[in-house]
Length: 286
Ligand SMILES: Cc1cc2nc3c(=O)[nH]c(=O)nc-3n(C[C@H](O)[C@H](O)[C@H](O)COP(=O)(O)OP(=O)(O)OC[C@H]3O[C@@H](n4cnc5c(N)ncnc54)[C@H](O)[C@@H]3O)c2cc1C
Ligand code: FES
Image 1: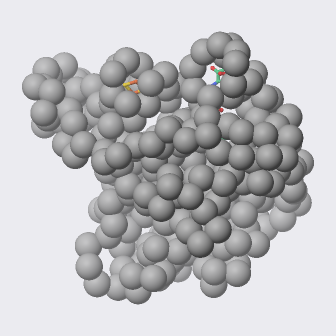
Image 2 (image 1 turned 90 degrees about the horizontal axis):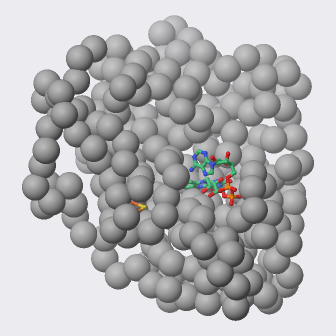
């Protein structure tokens, strides 16, 4: 496909200003590694938690308070929150210095948080829709608050979750407890169907299940495949994208992705317009 670059005025790039991000020093109220190679962190940040909506993320300073290294914050999705307790929980994978720092936080040690950032996820049109959530690996956490909100609004939710192996099926218990039916795939066949979550979703879509709407979050290749399948099936929905981020506030222009616009494409700032983009909108092949 051919894309042409299109330049837009700034007001087109920032459709809805994100209200009131806060900076807060949050004590770590719980931490642990409930799954192999995956960590959970619970933070006490009542003011910030009271503003959270499904789809928003936090930007964490992953260094001791008096240090400047590493300089940049690290974005992490919010997996759940509890307004009465003023706490929120995150799940993360240790991939580098920032996430390694998080894994060594001690109880009551404080972390500098900025958030909520990013646009809340758009909701399906009113009416009772059948919604599929398709997640791979560490892509699952932001879909849990979304699932709870969708259920509250009367939608029917089905989860497709893929992981490398049984022990990495993150948050399945939480979805089960919320009453969400699910299909599981693992790369090694140790739980559910052997293979890729995207193939399982495609099979069910073709042969046994009807969905009106999808949300998907996970590795880039999976998102691209889900976009192709859902666009071909004429489904609406949202791809939850990731990129490297610096400021998280729309100032550094470091988080651009290419999105289709008419016959051409333009750059979108993930931290301002996203992190969810409509099915068919993301240009993966440029
Ligand atoms: C909106 C958003 C939400 C996220 N939510 C989660 C979450 O809930 N749980 C979680 O584990 N991770 C999440 N991530 C990814 C997380 O931000 C990165 O893994 C983290 O910043 C890495 O920091 P680090 O210092 O440990 O690694 P670094 O030392 O910065 O990098 C280590 C390696 O990871 C690569 N890397 C770092 N960030 C990204 C990225 N965003 N995309 C692709 N490759 C990257 C680097 O290129 C490098 O190879 C999210 C990212 C975004 C943008
Ligand atoms: S991270 Fe700076 S503009 Fe998005």
